[in-house]
Image 1 (tube, rainbow, N blue to C red):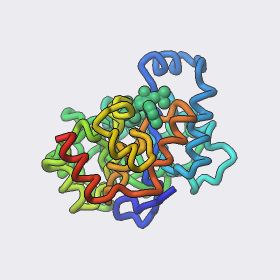
Image 2: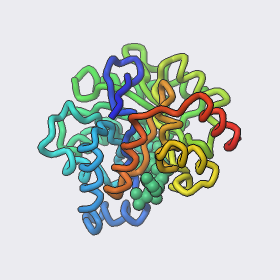
Image 3: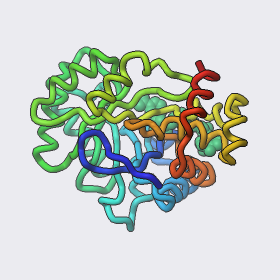
Length: 274
Ligand SMILES: NC(=O)c1ccc[n+]([C@@H]2O[C@H](COP(=O)([O-])OP(=O)(O)OC[C@H]3O[C@@H](n4cnc5c(N)ncnc54)[C@H](OP(=O)(O)O)[C@@H]3O)[C@@H](O)[C@H]2O)c1
């Protein structure tokens, strides 16, 4: 598994991550305490860790933090980069700290590597949210701060609201089939070295059977999903986080890491998906 530097942190993490949002039914039943279908999900996360994936993304709203906790038991904590998120209704200081501590408990850990604001909330001053993040950093419970689904202006406001630390990452919808990020936000993140955790990297799985990937896939002997993920992971600052709910998919996705698309292949894909 290839590693690359996460933002300006000096910390190297796997170029492919794992996402753990499953579906609304899972979320509803997980909050009721049901665990139907949990075992294969835990097995899938473990398969990814065994394949060298270190980046695991979850959120307080996904109902998957306990599964991540189960999957990482018995591993050295610093071999895993745990990213979770706070829901937009919890962005006032006290609510954020409460949410954070609950996530710590569900993840059965003493610190979180990356805490992300899941969606912006214009009713809460970003400075209040980021002050709370910096408190958690000062207490040694949090290492890096990120945001998700922020536009360029919101991203700049978030950066300005972190005087003592850095904004390390943005988590947007980004894949061959959604390239809206490339107009402004991606160049800005590249310049500022804000890591991009690309969600929906397989376009909800559709890219794994997209005929536009056929020629590169067959010429390179890689699956279409691996080509679509390498297209993201081969960029300096981008870390795709495909959903990890089936071990065989996770192992295949880990295989998007140790090879590179040529410049010619990138041009071909850019043209086909423009
Ligand atoms: N920040 C946000 O607001 C936000 C929003 C949405 C999602 N996310 C994050 O992004 C992650 C990914 O999003 P997503 O799951 O909707 O989209 P995705 O990763 O683009 O697609 C997931 C779909 O692709 C399938 N798949 C995965 N690997 C495959 C492979 N090698 N071959 C064929 N099919 C494959 C999965 O099937 P199986 O499940 O059966 O493996 C699933 O149906 C989420 O888990 C979550 O962590 C974040």
